[in-house]
Image 1: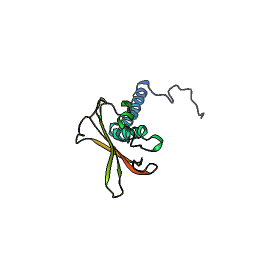
Image 2 (image 1 turned 90 degrees about the vertical axis):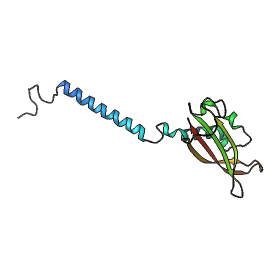
Image 3 (image 1 turned 120 degrees about the horizontal axis):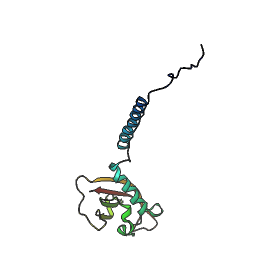
Image 4 (image 1 turned 60 degrees about the vertical axis):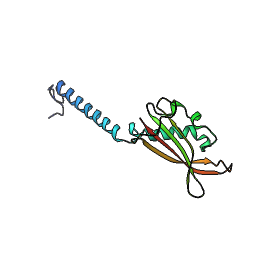
Length: 152
């Protein structure tokens, strides 16, 4: 018996069921991609504070150091901050006694105009350690903390 046949009905599918199968596979892939985009970190609005922290440090951390003599408000551009969000940026250092001292703090409203007031209770916060130039002893570096609070 030969492996091939002259019959025209082998290995074929009807066009309608084949199209339905392709549509079902496409729908399944779309649903999975939508779920994965929501579930993965950094792919949604939930990570706005982390993104803001990174972009603020990129703007402020010239040569990998924060210089307290620089004006934070002048250094940050409106494009650095997330659209539609109020932002508070705080830079603090720990002194020799272990007390935390605020070196600089600035609040910027959603339009980049000025102080939006205190953060709301649902404000999202992110922070990281940064090197800060010591104001009293030039050439010395203190360990500081850059914190951002983001709210609508």
